[in-house]
Image 1 (cartoon, helix red, strand yellow):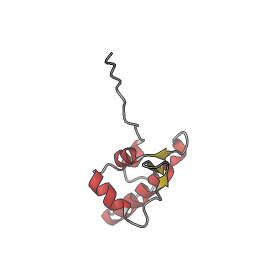
Image 2 (cartoon, one colour):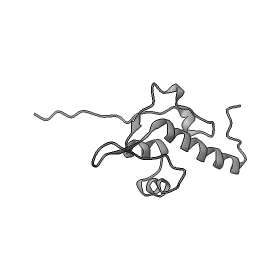
Image 3 (cartoon, helix red, strand yellow):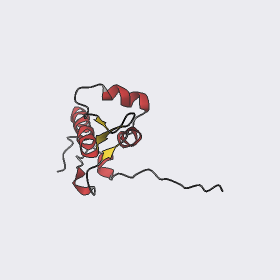
Image 4 (cartoon, helix red, strand yellow):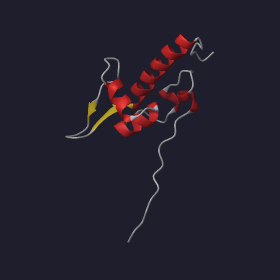
Length: 98
């Protein structure tokens, strides 16, 4: 029997995509997200993701199993916001919620 289920990617608030600072408070709860979801959240390709993951300010990896790794969603959002804030400030857009 061939049953196909469509699995949709999680959707994130538009604040994550703009220069405003998003927070994890409006998400139901903090959770560990795997690499594929981190890449979708960040909006970058795999190569760029792994280059960014080498930086010392990238969120710490959590070992989930022998071959499973993840990171806390709240830490990923904070990292993305810090990068956006730096980029928006450099472009003169501010990056605040005002």
